[in-house]
Figure 1 (cartoon, rainbow, N blue to C red):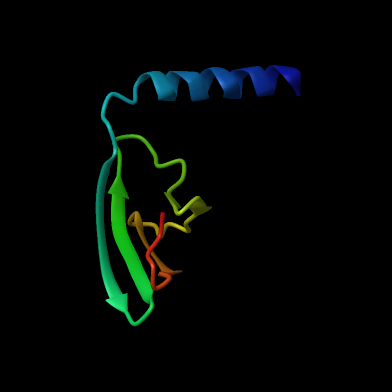
Figure 2 (figure 1 turned 90 degrees about the vertical axis):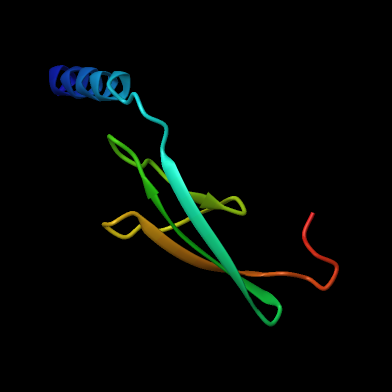
Length: 78
């Protein structure tokens, strides 16, 4: 098991080393009353590890898209 784990770690490091492009993020927002709907698409030449909106991990669909809703107080967000 230790050998398998080291091999997997080495493969992961090689994949990270070949990640030569920055991810491309296209994000959009629209207001619906006191809520903002944030949607977008994230692409990368290797893999997207995670997407955060307001500190919360977003579920990505297989094509890299996401959508979430945020409450926006009357005085706005800091």
